[in-house]
Image 1: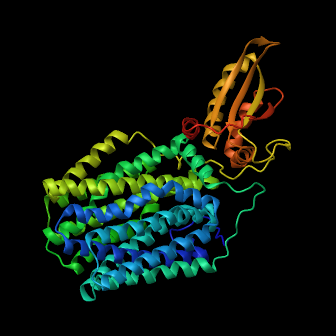
Image 2: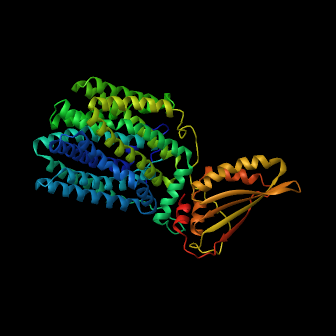
Image 3: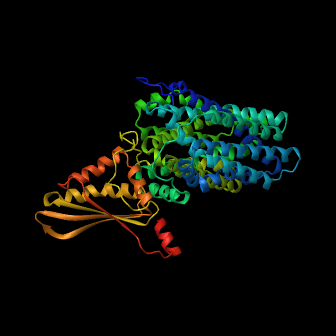
Length: 544
């Protein structure tokens, strides 16, 4: 992995890392192809039906798999070779795009087939996104990470400038079939770069996680990580109302503004122009605005853009508003993306992005159908106006949920010390009941109980099924006696939990341990002997 160390990295410094630049260019090429296809799909649907709802359902069909498969895709990306996984997903999408092109040339396309193929493309995209996000820290230094995330977002939005414009021209001159064919070819760029990438696969002494176990751990991490929950909630609040741009714009451009395929493509490109433009001033704004102020500012910009589109449906005004909406989209999502990158440890990063993907994809898919139904019932202007007003109300409600990732300097490097002495318990034995016994001086009793609360959070967050702290009644020789207990699915999973501890986590544990004069609690590991198959209710209980 090439790393470029600079005293103060610029917005373009990640491009000096060769593999990042190669993947960045290849991904941009593929994104251009995907956006060419998106224009063709929406254009073709408007030719098949005048219904705003059916046109909006193209967005729903593409994003619904993102919601359903997000966590599963994150789990796969964390337990398999990410390079091979990405190659597989790109080949799958290439085959789907090729099939869509063939069906179009044979004049076999119907609204149902178009929605089905959009959903298949969405499946491939949803399976690849967490892995793409998770490889960024593998190929960039921490110093360049924020700029790399912004460049990825900017690259996608450069594609938003070129893709729709090219798509409109291709559809107008050659037809939708050739647009779908170009998308199929564009996936070859990513496959070629990933094929040549010599990725360093992390080595470990423990057996690999199993798929269902990895999903459960990802679910528990999301459930017990409040910073990640705040990021997801802020994302949903913005996406639900801002995605009206992508779901209703085709109907607005074609049926309200009377534009052809080229005009529609150029209008869609305005979103990308705004996103690319704000990329160059975003580092400057981040130095002068707190992250939550930045998010609030660009949310208000999006509100203004959507309300003006509702009130003044003129092509030039709509284009300018789409530039503002694009700048808001890039600023908010590059900030959220970076917050996840710097606040989630590497062992669960893809699963965290999978959870983010589920929130983002689910909100987009459901909101697209919702705003399509609103537009069909009350009109396009009402859809844009209601979404803008709703976004402002939600901002007032949730602005106190602060994203703190940029304010905290946590050491997320894996802790390398041995967790405890060797054990004869087989790695597949379980469940495992862990007991840690503490003797705490009476004067430190309250401090210890308080110190164990963050310990509880990290145990549950990193995969423990249950956790409890017990105190033996009475004070013996000036000491209070406590027993910390938690449950792991197997000995292998318990050891993985130790390896998941970052340096920041070990500092939390060390503080609690220091309150015991011995400096380290006495640990016991008990293996369950009940071999009965758990009931369905028990399995559901373990999942919670």
